[in-house]
Length: 384
Ligand code: A3P
Ligand code: MG
Ligand code: MG
Image (tube, rainbow, N blue to C red; front, side, top):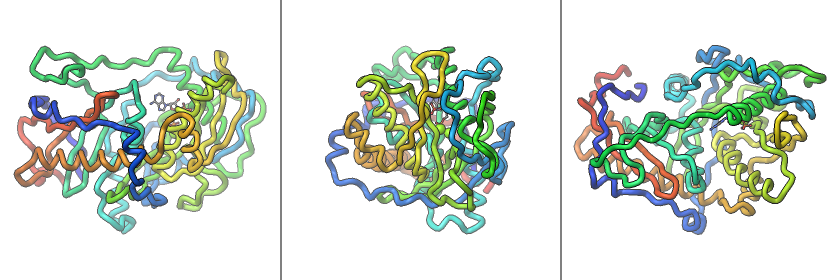
């Protein structure tokens, strides 16, 4: 399996006609139509670990087990010693390598239409309710399968006018502020307080510093259906409750932190964030989300925890104005649109190997265009 190449010398000449083709969001319309055949319970086809140095291991060495966290725990502890580094892990390499092994071992029963990280799918699923963050992905179709990877680069196009021929404007690179970074740390600290590396270990009591290493992850690769599409998705599972038997026994747990809910406004914010909890967990078949509520200001302490069943989270959406059906119907339509646009841009065979950019701008919509390559690598050049 090739890794999506972004060759040097890539140029983004977006034809005017493409810039006008925008796939619009419409949550009310997508909520109103008959729900697309929902995702079946995802079928786990492989697991893998990233070790403490973020090196891929085809084993369960980074699997963590849930324990009740100590209420009152200090979620800031150890923040000063948290190493700064660029966490730019977004290429498909590890997923493709793992998927190839699953194919070899006969675990893949059906040819997928889409292969990507769960995080990419979450971005698509929740896009209609996203009013702030824009995103971009690189797309490629190989042998009928669409591969999607994150694109963290900048776009050489004016996002306001979508005209590529006038003076270009770079999308400003988002930087994480110190307060935001500290909040991120509290999320990882919560994960540390909630997990141990052996199922028989006792919950952590008393004061102890959280052990935060964001390199380490345990990931599940699943195959699942959405309407006519068969998807292969890989993503992190924070921990399991009880024992791990080598398959998803309905005991996977997603951990999340939130500011403690004290007012109606806090409640609305929480119900809105539940959209991402739901989408993220639903896609991998994680049935339980444990939320740690932290004090509203520093120092951040764990004030309470609460468990939510993933399938119940859409009820919070009814109150906050998001619809799980609208998300699924839209995702189905977006996959169709990306496939269509890739085909339309490649009238000649082979379509394989052309690289596309998918761009989403809140309130504007989704666009797909072919990236200009100095020379398109032929499929034979790529190691099987
Ligand atoms: P919280 O989710 O508790 O905020 P995940 O929940 O996906 O397992 O991620 C673990 C933690 O990584 C998050 O904790 C958060 O601190 C950080 N994180 C994940 N995705 C992020 C994003 N898009 N922006 C900022 N921080 C993120
Ligand atoms: Mg996680
Ligand atoms: Mg989590």
